[in-house]
Image (cartoon, rainbow, N blue to C red; front, side, top):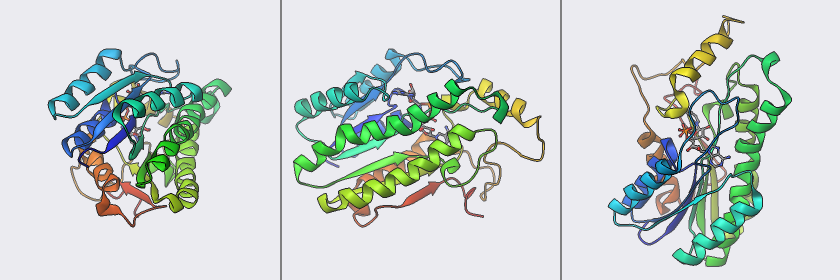
Length: 270
Ligand SMILES: NC(=O)c1ccc[n+]([C@@H]2O[C@H](COP(=O)([O-])OP(=O)(O)OC[C@H]3O[C@@H](n4cnc5c(N)ncnc54)[C@H](O)[C@@H]3O)[C@@H](O)[C@H]2O)c1
């Protein structure tokens, strides 16, 4: 990855931070984007802060690489285009996009308001589309090809109970990756979706777990969470997902495109 440039959304913490640390350790400079502020009110876990985003940039700097940060909501198409254009102008090129920003709001179907549904679709689907639209043209302009990685979820490959909007949005990520892969292939840009199972991040905080347990009481037959892990006692960390991102970003994966790749301890495999 030496001297390549990667754009990462949702970079303030959690998996996005791990992707920034890993890609910079592998030699890339990074453009780090995060809302770094309040998430929609239905989200049952704390929001990231500007300090979190600055901390990610410091971790990149400690790897000897450059990090540019921008506080942007991925729902803001024009804002995304402007931030990415400015980052590319400063760092000189763009090779990799990791569209990672997302939210998750567990609830029974009848407690999801129209606003809640829209918020999840707007961030997880439209925000991901905005991210690709803001960055792909710059990769094409470089003429060197590149790699785009859309972060889905095991819920993008199988049904996750009590998460209708989330499950729908993450299934859409699978389609988005396949469709972009088809059209961007002629520019030697690979596009894949990556589907984590449970990962230890602020998204999975106590309030989130409580919200899932609360929803599960309505229908105990449906067990929430990715419960059928095939390897005992597995606790996936952000770095485990970052390892797959690093591989997809690299030339080691040069013939991998249009794929939906789970890193989920097998929960979608049976
Ligand atoms: N944690 C898990 O168990 C898990 C499992 C499967 C998939 N995922 C997916 O992985 C991705 C990263 O999640 P995470 O676990 O690191 O969660 P997280 O909440 O710790 O981090 C997500 C980051 O995205 C940012 N973000 C959210 N909405 C944004 C917006 N509109 N614009 C810009 N930034 C925004 C947040 O501020 C936060 O910094 C998400 O797409 C999530 O759906 C997570």
